[in-house]
Image 1 (cartoon, rainbow, N blue to C red):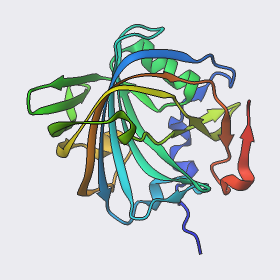
Image 2 (spheres, rainbow, N blue to C red):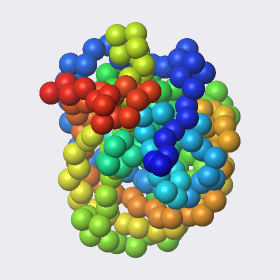
Image 3 (cartoon, rainbow, N blue to C red):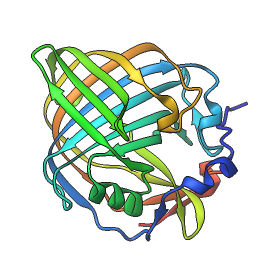
Length: 245
């Protein structure tokens, strides 16, 4: 029997971002710097994943912190905590929580792509032996993580898994697929290190990081694309997917 998520929609409905419409224009985002860190997590995380999705085996999560030097709303940084899973046969990263560094970016990401974004301080700092991400909400540190001992790799060695967000679309909870394109100019890998993660502030109570998997940092041209698919969060995506374009 396949495993499915067990998220109770009633518990999260009040805080879902409302997507303005499904006809949002794409954003072009050149020269983005993306730090991605992955860890295996505890087994009992299905309650955090929508019922339409399958948990990854073994279960794992990613922290993705990106600095966008150019965007339609100016420079900003975005941190995401994603629980990884599958939508049908396709690997996807379900966004548990996110923090953006500017109000304009947070509002746009909520209204256009359904990201559960709050506004806070997001920094990505490079040193000679590590790249460190820090996030603060309401003055409280809620994340400190790093890639340690970076080494150059080929851009083709980095794979980014598409994102899904849970949002209110026309008043109804829907999973929104966000599937950017990436042109990698520079890539490095290293070891992930986690110093702090305040899981309740990321809507991830009960999530525990266990074994580090991998860490990469890239410089690339990317985008936030037009929405192509939305999915019913309560039934398997093979039956609940709606193509927008």
